[in-house]
Length: 102
Image 1 (cartoon, rainbow, N blue to C red):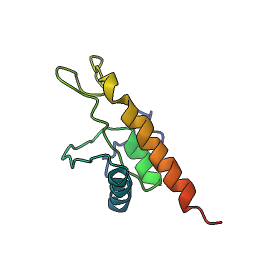
Image 2: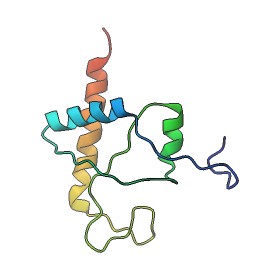
Image 3: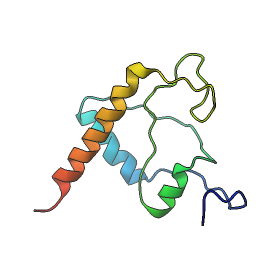
C-alpha cells in the first residue's frame, strides 16, 4: 500500500512493547531519563514503518512553550535539545553493533 495515496487507509502508530522496553533500558543505562507519554497518533507516517518492522516512536522533548505540534507550520523546536537526538541514535547504533554475532 502506498502511504502517499490519499485514498489509502490510515494506520495507527502502535509501538512494539519489546522495542519500547529495549530502547528505554538503553537510554536509561546511558543516563538519559525517559517519560511515559499517553499521546495517541492516528495519522503519523512512522506507523507505516511499524507495519513492516518492530520499532518504537520517541519524542526528544523539543516542543516547548508556545510551539505548535511537530507537523504544524508553526512548530518551533528548541535547539537546546537537539543533542538528545544525536545521543539517542549513537546509543542505538552502538548497541546494534555490540549485539551482532562475531
